Length: 286
Image (cartoon, rainbow, N blue to C red; front, side):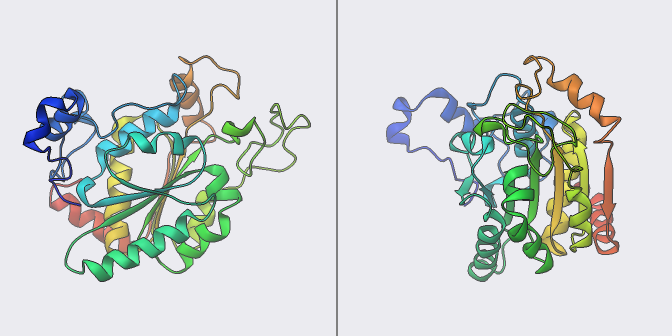
């Protein structure tokens, strides 16, 4: 885990694909001020993906990866779901956990890294869908908040079990009908962002990923606060456009519509987190 993470062996360089060479020569390793504005010019940490065309999760991935202040020393823990289809294409250390226990795995990794590298910053980020975070993995998620683990949890909320046929989840909107939920959701959407606050998270955001720059800001804030204070939580609306019956080019408009409704920007900052954020702004990192 260093800025030489993609140092190519010179004896093999002539056989290496150009996109891998670009990752060594044009990526933004070692630059804490890296961000989404680098995407048109620098090499992305995500080469490609196998998600559906127009999938908001693919947008969110690019914005998040571009915003990591310390990618060379970052581990991402993910769980089974649509997101797990992308991780083989990411130029970072990733760990695929069992469905729902991602926060427990991340807790162990973070503690181990703090013991093994006490004088070096190692960021641990959980990135999973609403099924893994809010439904099956809720206990592991909340327990990591209760223990004040210094990790950032990011939930991609598409409000449905999208990769297994279209079952309702705890975050599905009340009354919504899916292919494998023909009677419609019987109870309201679980407000996971409020549970995160009540469970001890120091920085919590609910939003869609329609604004790349705003995604960058909240990702950086969440990571910086997690480093110094405790758990942080980001709840991103990344709708499954296929399950809700939209075309591949409708995703951005769908998210912008929900920016005014269920996913109107919401941010919670604890007093301790405010101090960290203020310090990082003074340092020019936010």
